[in-house]
Image (cartoon, rainbow, N blue to C red; front, side, top):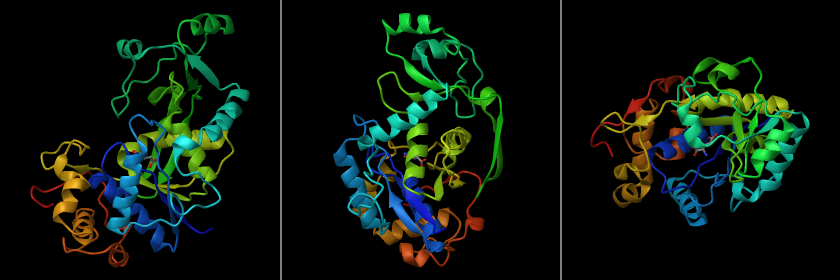
Length: 313
Ligand code: GLU
């Protein structure tokens, strides 16, 4: 099977070094296998991800030399490539799960969820304690008069194990470490977990390369692949880039945003430094995407978070 890698950015602002490293690794990992690359814009939350940000992101990726074979501007048979235009596909998947009796309405507010002392997951989220799991149809109908429900998936008391292509063997006990998770929010927006699975499968993606902050989501996604009868891709999670002071890099780190970086550096300089931090460029010397292809090796990529040295960019 030919390899199809993907970039799946959420355009809620200008891309930063963390997003760029993600796209670079996804691009190199797929291209090294003579694979193709797909771009999908994860703009489910259209209020946070307006189309003009997506357009800017596409332009930034092209400027960096991170091209794609399928996606916006390179339409293939499995589009549209903007999640905001794919609601019907998510509705269909939700219906399949509903018919299996695995979906239930949840009326808990955010404040109520914070108040209950459920165990915390590694990402700081609480484990859903199952408050609405066993409501009767009559109780649910009564509550629905006052508040639109979110929809949750009933997870089995089961451990999901898989081998990450970079981080090695992983396991998670879904009921204890995650709990019943959201498929649709109370405002009607489909949840990332459902959309990403449905789309990666529908678009024929064979490998997913992304930051280790999503490693913890993978067992949920593997459960959805199985329930929906879809083929799961290979997963490669890589460590996160940290700001020089050790904090997680975010859109608020102005220096790490491409708007600032583009003013003062060429694409090859940005990519060469990122590849150096990611362990496979022997020095921080400038290199293009295609030049980095010869150096790229997953075995050289660290497994611990990487701090950006002060003044490197
Ligand atoms: N859209 C997600 C993000 O930008 C990435 C999703 C994924 O790679 O699975 O964080």
